[in-house]
Image (cartoon, rainbow, N blue to C red):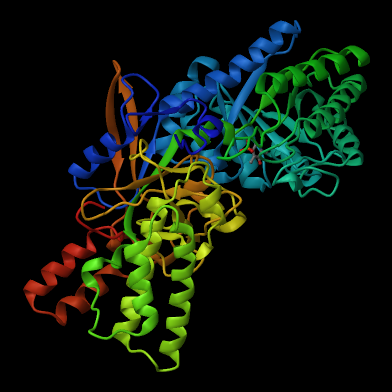
Length: 598
Ligand SMILES: *Cc1c(COP(=O)(O)O)cnc(C)c1O
């Protein structure tokens, strides 16, 4: 049975049973049962389900991998991890993550002042905080204050000017100085989509000359003791392990050299993030095994420490995508199948029809599994000729409507007659015969990386999985933007079911959307975030909590700085009271489309 590549991307988090997609956890509830539960509470539009148990699973996995490797190689350093806040700062995601990480001392990484405020407030005292990104004096002052609060915080500098600010604050304030890390600009570049985070021409980090200079500055100010960490980040979604190994060697030697120069408290290498997530539904794109990855890190650092006669460094990682992507699933209702308007009942055939229409009729009546393919192609040809005849004024609007209906009916019938086993046939068929599925969501809001960088996300229906999907599908969102479309791609074909939405519901799930999408999403056409739900399991029972409804129209307008009382006054003054009441109700609903069940 067609399984939408679930064995490739789902990491056994989801299973197909009885035609339904289910959570492979506790009592294995189906996604559709949760959707129905939420609908009954009258939340319309797209839904964003968050699964804290999947975040916990990733955190457990990360620590287990490194603990295994440390044990295997009898490594002396300790493993530490922080979650990079830029990947997902939303409280419904973050607070369960912080809870799950407590037992490990899992910390947070901040890349801006706002993120640092989140870290200072919610991070468990004692768990590490690292601070990256470009900084000003205020941001560094914040880090001093966090340190005073008792946080184990390390300021990782991107340039010498940041060190100058630290030295200045150290003199000016009475506050104790937090730990210092140096982000190094490596010669070895990363791989994957975001490789420009590393490399000699990277936007970030200190060159070797600057590293030496930083060390001299620390010495001059008697502050060598604050230097504790070397940091690099070679980019997101590493597809192979080799660039990381090279970067590890390079940074490992920098660590050892600095130690031998007298950096006595230098004790850690922070290897950044970059662990990949499998987004493909067709072929594995991640070419390393996670245990192999952790083993390589430990083994490489152990060797360098031995070679240069220094202590084995503690290890920090900042993987974000790996921790967060799988925990969030977007569910979008299908509003419409484009071909649904072509119904036999709507045919308005005349006494005397143009010959090509008569031929379409015959094709429709006579089609069989043997002739399906041939008749389908004939019908497409006929339709094209008839449309040309219409442009030339030889047939009328009724004829044209009949032609469109008949051609679409033939295509539908042909597809159901074809014995599509391996879908090669469907793939070969003209891309004119795809079905268009209109989805109640905005790609710009919910899958911005699809729009911006063509990032693919696994997609599949959450029901009907015991039936053969027969339509090659293109997906349309409800924005008025032609970019709001996911075209059918014969290289990575998506097949969906032929459903009658008057009789049954049909929802598509998009998976692995927990990293970056939440905060990158934009309000194009003024669609705001979907309704969010946290799915937690208590004594194996599923509970839907922390429901955060999609924003009301009035609040969206206020967010973009309209004076909402002006809007209300203008509308109120130009309408009678009863009409205004209706408008006011609409203003307090979200902007996604409403149908009986969407
Ligand atoms: C973005 C970023 C990360 C997280 O990268 P992922 O690919 O999501 O793991 C880690 N460290 C730094 C410095 C970053 O900028």
